[in-house]
Image (cartoon, rainbow, N blue to C red; front, top):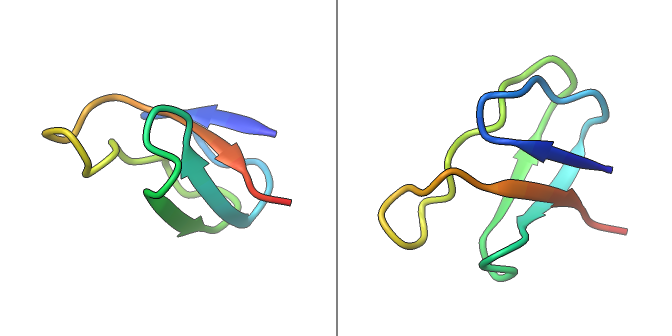
Length: 50
């Protein structure tokens, strides 16, 4: 499961940034994916952790 900055989350969980795997967020269904705070708040692809 993946989501990009600005998209709505369709599955709650812990996601990591594809570019910066050590950067993680805990996001709930319906919330909007934020930018990654590593590397000057870049737009990110977030990947659901297993």
